[in-house]
Image 1 (cartoon, one colour):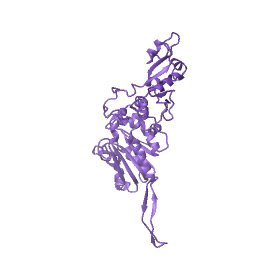
Image 2: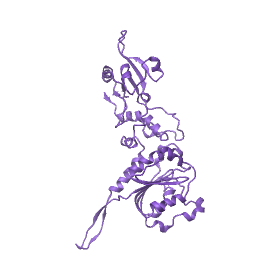
Image 3: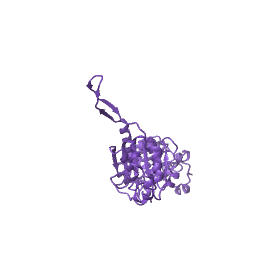
Image 4: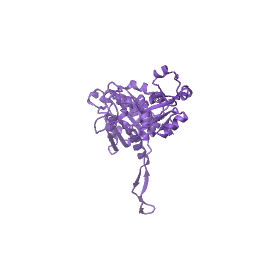
Length: 361
């Protein structure tokens, strides 16, 4: 028997028991407990407990698939028409514990209990006036929504978030920590002497396309995650859709609800190119990270704005070490990242199309 703990997330007191002596001990102590299914690992138990909270935080991520409870989950619908992985996790609560626990304030009267996902059971002696009353309730009702207490960094540490977030963080760290050998001739020693050069610690840039052609579930999820992502990457940020806006690293970003107003509609090009000219071009960037589809600011439909398009000479002084391309459906650079390849044609380019497989469309 052990107390359930998940990182630093504050949970109400709850013990995990295996069938047999653990249950007897829990009842003797009068502590609330759940019985872990025999074929479940500790990791699976934690994922089941967190599933409801994760779904509430990011409803367009296919959590049953991400957490490994199923290989298939409908990509088109947000309705909870899937089996709850925690449905068999029943919390056993003694009447005394239910009365005294700060996090559980329901009345112990049977009428109230039955209407509040709580069922009274007989857990002890059959003698009159000597009945040890225990109740059962679903774990979601017992624990409640933990969304107020969890942060994305902790969820990443628990390895319950989509892996593409870790892929980005790993790629950025690899770029900073990479070491390369540089050949050279030392005139003073009159000998061939090389040297080691550390990887780039140049700033990073994230570009996120949230226009109407981006699946709504993908755009909504990304505006919810983007603040954490840019903080971990120490990156400047451009979000583009019907309008384009820039936020420097370490400046406050609007809430996801506010950013959601940028989702949908057509693309634009003039504001985007103005941002590039004022904030991006002529600098050295470690990583340019682009999320989007084929829509590009120099597409034929923007021919009327051709006078605002970038010219080749404007790109020449810009250095980029690596381009991380997250295309929604094709193995190529998203349209709003094409300028980066034009500026740095020899930059290491990594393309990822699997990142959207965890999100509803």
